[in-house]
Length: 76
Image 1: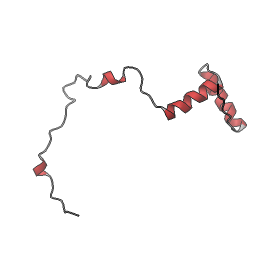
Image 2 (image 1 turned 60 degrees about the horizontal axis):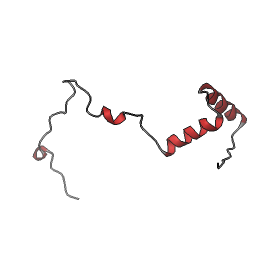
Image 3 (image 1 turned 90 degrees about the vertical axis):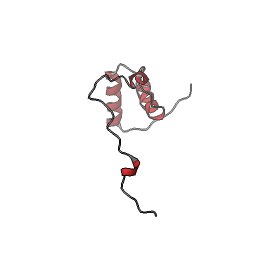
Image 4 (image 1 turned 120 degrees about the vertical axis):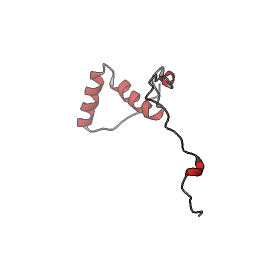
């Protein structure tokens, strides 16, 4: 498996190690997880199912004005 080397200061390494330990992960797994979320952002499972799921009468599209009611614009 390919490897990568990172050069960080000692205080930053301690922060990384503590963060990884809090999530019960190795430093390598913790770092690659953070890198990959920036390279390939992903939505949680079921995210697409949320579209249109609000059942509230107060949540509605505002009335749309006619295009002809728009302000005249100067041609450039």
